[in-house]
Image 1 (cartoon, rainbow, N blue to C red):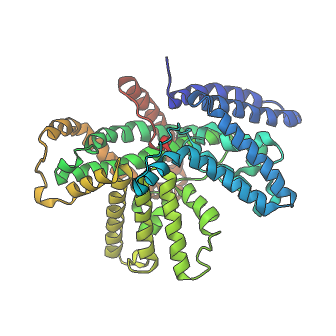
Image 2 (cartoon, helix red, strand yellow; image 1 turned 180 degrees about the horizontal axis):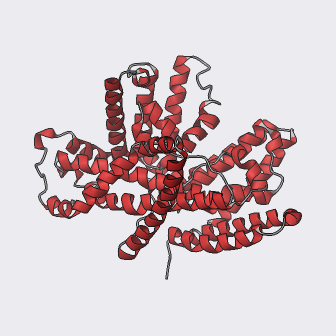
Length: 485
């Protein structure tokens, strides 16, 4: 039987955890042996996981780690530091470019020049965008602070290849985890919290995102231009919620599994659909990617220190790169520039999103933000700009709000519109709102209530696990959206 990467992940995790727990029970007087053994176990599990998905391309991952380790040692040595950093950046971006963008670049060149160059068909290594950015984080952090250099290549391999977050993040900056690579503390409270987070993330994915994906798959086809406006909007809203629960669900799982092993990974989402403007949205959505681009691209380009025009150009460059990072397709590039345009409009106070104080004003700004993000995610989801244009045309053709351009579509869409679907849609809308932080703050002010709420949260996580198991046994499973990046 052939297992997917996700199925293998959940097969690998229990055995790895059991061995990790046994090794962690070694006494502190054997710490010099215990901690390297714990790291070795996680490295072996990570390499086994990656080899399962892409056995040949495991060599690429190991080569990348070794090259960055050697270059990091050279950068910390003090001689030719800028040259070595440049070489490291060229190497990492070059590998990403060859494997992810060579075909796209060739197609664009052929389209512009009329040439007929052969388009290379290169398999995309899973997680290459994520582990490349972590490798870049390491060499840049060492350049900025040579004391961060990792002389133990095994620890660097663990940082770049750690299996819970290897293929879909969150993107962890090296300096934020350097100390944890050396030693960690495995606690019962940490493990319990980690399992709670893991089960909730799994529930987000299987119980919500996968259910919404059925309608999304029916709507986003070559016949998208034939959808009535009402159903085009319903499909767009379903995708808005699907991608949030899919990606934030995986982030929860990765953070939870990391916590079980003693790691503390940064948060990746903070209720982005409650944002007041696109600038605020990018502080809340895929936080680790936004932080990476700010720290390693926007600030080195000059940030906001070289005048307003340069700041706006820097913002546009960052969002162009953000779009391109997501995939070798014009839809992603346009999506990135689209977000950058609205950020520039807000930065110039043409759209006063961040300055609104009144309640009505905040409601209007949140509506504008959700509308802008929804339209943007149509670009993100579409297979081509042509499909995106057709889909947006259906959304905004209010003259035919319920008129079917292709009546056969009705027979495909109707089976998706069940009471169960609308129940899940309603739960997703509620779950995407920042209700949990409000409840947590309310409970924390009352110790007895807080104790009850914590127990209920663990019970709810177990219920989620049981429901996920039942769902998986009864139906099909779809891969995480961000696995393709």
